[in-house]
Amino acid sequence: SDAKVNFAGATEVFCTVPGAKIGLPNPEEYGSSSAPKIITVKVGSKTGNHPYPSGGSSSSNAYFLDGLESPALRFSGADSSAKYYYRFDQSDSSNSGHPLRFYLDAAKTTEYTTGVTNTGSSPAPGSSGAYTQIAVDETTPNILYYQCSSHGYMGNHVTSIGNKVNSNLVTIGDVTV
Image (cartoon, rainbow, N blue to C red; front, side, top):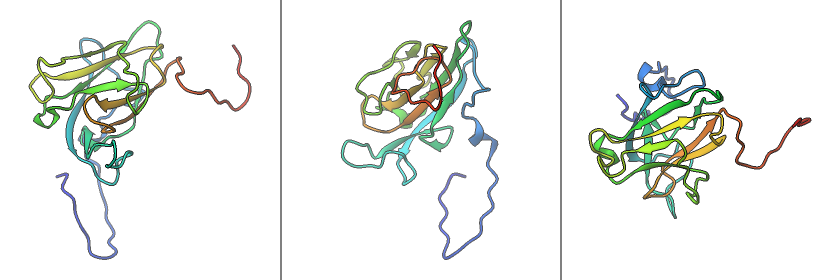
């Protein structure tokens, strides 16, 4: 039921992960422009599991994607002939005031907009039909950050299986160009 449970003392716990919690994208999962991979977004209070703790410039809120608190994601998109589409559904009322955007850095210095569409303010996040969508291909940077454009450090990072490197390149072995 997604409710927290407290145990007194040492307790052995067995957990079966519900199928709804396994819906985040893997490299084998992608959508088309007419049927994008849907990721449901809700906003809630951060826990100690968030990659960016609350305080300073970091919000006390977090994005929950398909029920998971700000998970790291992995997108496909190495094909040169097709784009893979991922839609972040922000219809839930908890998204009000929290537009999800993509950036080249966690601090949101540079927004990434290539292949990204969103409903903007009509409908606004938290309203029926609100979303942010990204079309991923071989030129999408290999790491992006999904963050709230209004508040700091609510999200996490996305790695993209593609050909464009947007960070320092460190290799083990030779590089052939």
